[in-house]
Length: 123
Image (tube, rainbow, N blue to C red; front, side, top):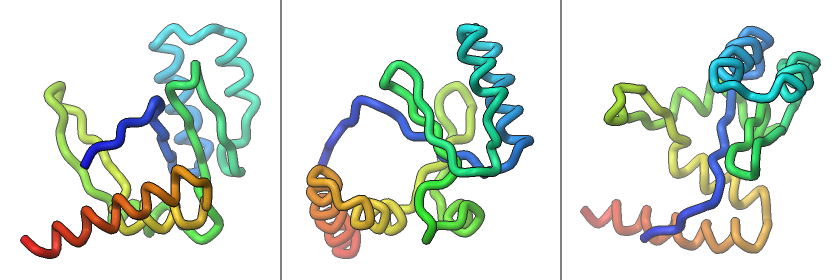
């Protein structure tokens, strides 16, 4: 099963410190100064959603039913070939978020996730 998307969603723990870290990363990536200025005005402890070039979306809260620390505790991780540790939502959490979003593509994704989970159970 494969469904690629055109963007990456990154959920950060909603703290001002994490917002400052994110801004530091974007500065290292030579993000336009006007974009950096906009980020510096944000309160990262509040719900925020912003993106860049339609390829990257950053969120500080994904849904009121989901606590970052609880979901992070269930997340899956791997180390990429560059040695960076990357975390992904647990499939059950992703499924629940797709159900809550209720967009047509998200509901199609729920069916795909259910099929994948059934295959995984059969192993």
